[in-house]
Image (tube, rainbow, N blue to C red):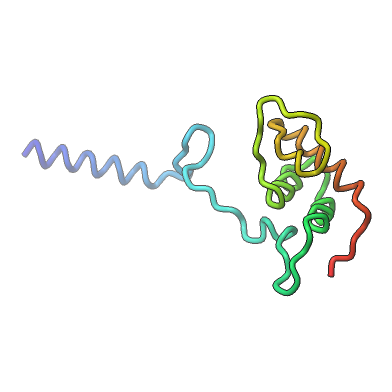
Length: 121
């Protein structure tokens, strides 16, 4: 009888926990992260001719400056690989080594704005 009551209590508490509105969290992030549809739409190359990195970086400039979305766009083009003490960036590829998001965004912005405007086709 005690075993049945213990199993019922565990099942009841598990079902109550599963019905909460918040997703299960690991630290301060949700256990499962789902990107909204079209999140990397700005950097997705058309199905025909592939776009160059320069064109994709310039496409990121169309997103509001100083936003996480613009940094995510840059990171989709060139994935970050932070280093503890990165050297001064000599090219846009060196921006991925900055650990701080603000520094990385400013670095990418500087190089993307200095690229001559290229056709997207």
